[in-house]
Amino acid sequence: MKKLWLYSLLSICLLQGRAQTHLAPTPPMAWMTWNYFGENINEQLIREIADAMHSSGMLQAGYQYLVIDDGWQGGRDNRNNIIPDSKKFPSGMKALADYVHSKGLKLGIYSDAAPLTCAGYTASLHFEEQDAKTFASWGIDYLKYDYCNAPKDSFTAKQRYKTMADALRKSGRDMVFAVCEWGERQPWHWAAAAGGQLWRTTFDIRDSWSSMMGIYEINVQLHAYAGSGRWNDPDMLIVGLGGNKGPSGDLGGTGCTITEYQTNMSLWSMMAAPLIATNDVRQMTQEVKRILMHAGIIAINQDSLGLQAKRIASKDSIDVLLKPLVNGDVAIAILNKSATTQPYALPFASIGLEGRYTVQDVWTGTTTKRSQQWKGSIESHATVVLRLKKE
Image (cartoon, rainbow, N blue to C red; front, side, top):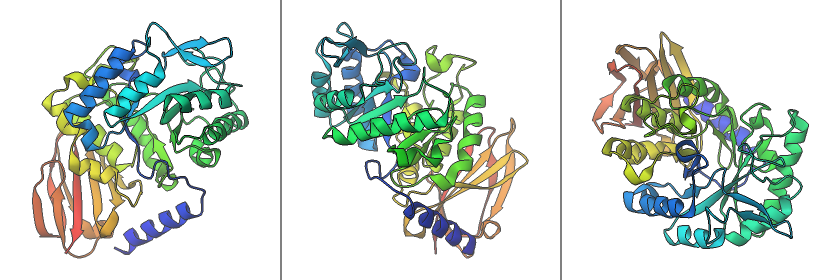
């Protein structure tokens, strides 16, 4: 228990010594257009997604934001105000934001710190204050700010992100600011000071086990940099994409099993990552709903202590992650990266947890009292998630 207490204390002290914002006190939960729909978006789709997020239970589960990614832009008007594509969004963004807000959701939008976005649309370089005021006038609540078509050096990136963050603050409306330069310039060291509440730590995720694991291996090492108002973002959840041929299907994104999708949700929740779904929420299977809206796993992600899990063991294809929670509870994840089922025993004392615990298997709901260990078999590519309460 001493090791756990020291980990919590050091993490909290580290966070208290840094500038923080409270726009995202827990990791943002959202749905985003890109990985499933790409540029094929319009206002009717966004309205249908808002309806589905409300009626399916996603909003009630905690998914607050509906984020429109790249492809909405229609250029600039004769006063250089950025405008939406009039064919895709004939009613305009203000009317769409009003509709999304009427469903109890918040609306996010996308731009880029360069003249053009990743998909070649109008972006915000040199128009930061003007665009921020426009976004505020529409009722935007979240900005994803990309970095395509921009210089490679870190100095320029820091300047451009700070310029937009300052513009958002001057706009008169609170907007969560998501830094998206893919981890190339180690934004975990500077993005919070530049004004971001979350920052991408990796390149884009694909709908595959290998992509998920590659991103996990990068993000799991960054636990010291996460905390309230400042989150490591390993990109969107791939749960429920099912091999769809959108952007997530590029470069080998052929789909995952339900077990692998559940591991995606487990690991992202343990790592205090933003939970950003990107599937077609209008037609989710019951299994996809179960994974995305599981109250127990979401509670671990949204825990107010705000600590990212630390990997405390990695041997023979088994990883063990530990995440302190409020009220002295502890979450443990045991990941089987191998292609076969593996037996595994974890004496809690071996990871610094002395005494006896009430142990809940978060996914199954099974509870064991007065336990000093977990023992069982872990399916290939599965993750067991436990919540421990000291007795």
